[in-house]
Image (cartoon, rainbow, N blue to C red; front, side, top):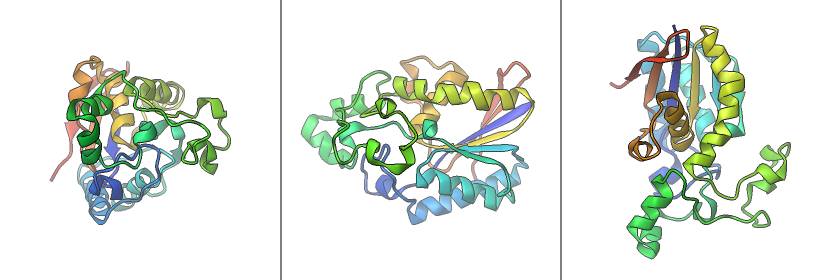
Length: 230
């Protein structure tokens, strides 16, 4: 039986200031650092040992992974950083305060942008100075596949090649994997793993710094799901 641990990064500076973050590279807050370290202690207490680790190319997820691995004495575990695990791209909403945006566009519209499975946010054009096309970490990608905004459906489509090509084969081989990423990239993975409907996925929450453990059988069917907490 293989295990998969999903962990959303600890609180970020923009979580703290209530901003849409998306692909913007924001660091952990002091609370986020503590959340990540505490997650690592919970992992150690649970006796979870990993063979492979995956994270996004964004600082808040990378640091969370490293704190978790350090606190559980597993910093040596092979690690893959990939844009496919990035948070969903919030388009032109990135950097805006969520409360102020709700006051401008209405609570219902902002809720749809945040939680709807297939509604896109206002898109960011490729020639905008804030476009990820200008970010060196994506220099090896075809500019045409760098998004100007994503919904959860598109995020899942982005994540799935990584699951199919790299993560699932390791789990089928009996290896244990940890993924430190973001609320929506992990919600997308959870949707696929648990076969959650398009409607029900709107209600799935991923808490910052909370390890979620899946146990799989040899057919990659979920046998158990556990959340680690104090």
